[in-house]
Image (cartoon, rainbow, N blue to C red; front, side):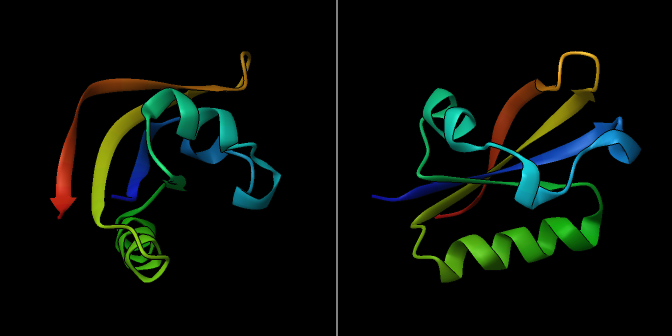
Length: 85
């Protein structure tokens, strides 16, 4: 079963690099999912959900995170919430 994860940035939104410049391969391995996308707004969250479903994900989850630009890393907060599947 293919799983996708949306990382919803709640703090540090203005410092998040563009999706194309992020290396999300390591994040997907750490999170145990097939694909990861980053959202900084509710619209991007909805788009990420649609994007993952159209890419064949059978399960889509979301986790809130803070982006730390000094470490160039996301710090998840709380447990992932299943959105679909």
